[in-house]
Length: 544
Image 1 (cartoon, rainbow, N blue to C red):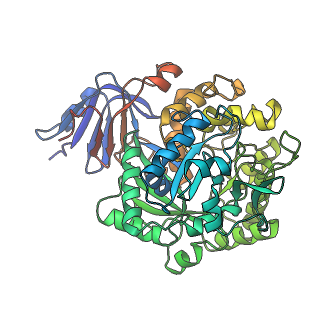
Image 2 (image 1 turned 45 degrees about the horizontal axis):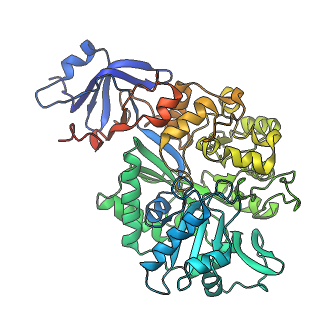
Image 3 (image 1 turned 135 degrees about the horizontal axis):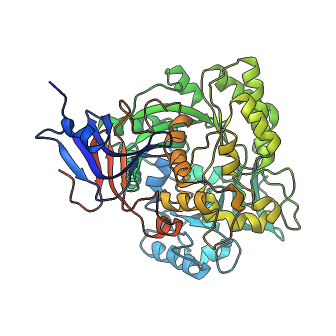
């Protein structure tokens, strides 16, 4: 007796993968792709209980894979004050939002905000401690820059953290003063004392954040993601929260857990002792790589560069750890069997990381470990050759071009800024770049990401080296197959072929023929299928 499909999608282009191309229909059965082909090929697989989805000309693709975001943080910060430029483009508006939250908050409770970008504010500068004091005199405030590497704190927050004008600057950090007075700006490791006095989230709050953030991803057609620093907010408790979320059916997206490995906060010893190494888990929840932070962000002037940023201070950014420490931590994780996915944006940080990877791979060769460079914003041709030779892969977020490209030019100049995140170059070199959002740094919305890959345009319309554009099929491949490849799961998901997971995104228009502008401004995800089940239905007409 021939198997009958659970779901059949037809009457619209179905893009199965860059090498597989477009088919007319697809059949899904028991959480997997059963078959793809013409309408006549799939017709025998339709039974009386098969759910039929009429695409009506819309495009279906493999479910998207956001290869680098922070799911726990995304869910938690959905309750924070929204300080993003699109919401509050002026400093007065930002301060008013904080003041409004303070009026609804009991004295002494923390007010947390995220998303400002000083290069997009009307005043073209960071907010100041005294301005936050005026907006919230009775509550400690921490305002986090969009990149997540710089925070502005009011006086009450600094006092609770024990930070004053005499506090020593920690290695890999910055406590800014002007004329001997704190401005409230803290960068990188200097922010740790503030985080230490902010109440930790409970396990239930962590699970709720995973659930809320995951449903938000499904609404964009994202069925898989990488949580890029598990342990950053809740320590080992985040591992427990993820497993509880999965056990209780509250894990909406397939999640690849990247373990925080930084000194003093590393989850690696506990996870390794428990047998939680790369690849442990299943299709819904899997232990992925180990994450080290080697520098900060370019827009925040903390990414570690070999040449100074523009400006009189001649800063080259922040080096988080010395070479010997990075090499020792990389070697330890490599020997333990972990893949590594470390944060390095500036060319100096990338150099430090490639060298550490090369030494680990020389000591214990593994031709398919696939160590990753997260972001990899300002890599050089010489570094690319070394990456190819050692099997090291970039894992960028092309939406950074759209959101932050103008900021890169303002802090680095055109010579360095325009050529950042060279996606076409990586594609042509066979480095299989995935893409993602780094949410909550950027919105997980994939359409600005697609737009940036297709046009290299910023939100202001600046073209960031048009020679680095890619085609829509290459952009889709980055968001699907290469996302799976970055997790060593390309044989499990990322394409719509028989036997792979039945994860499908249906968009409101045919991305293959739409203009980049229509993709950016006039496209939605209408339907998301994960494991053969409809988990998002924007129009509310297809769900059982």
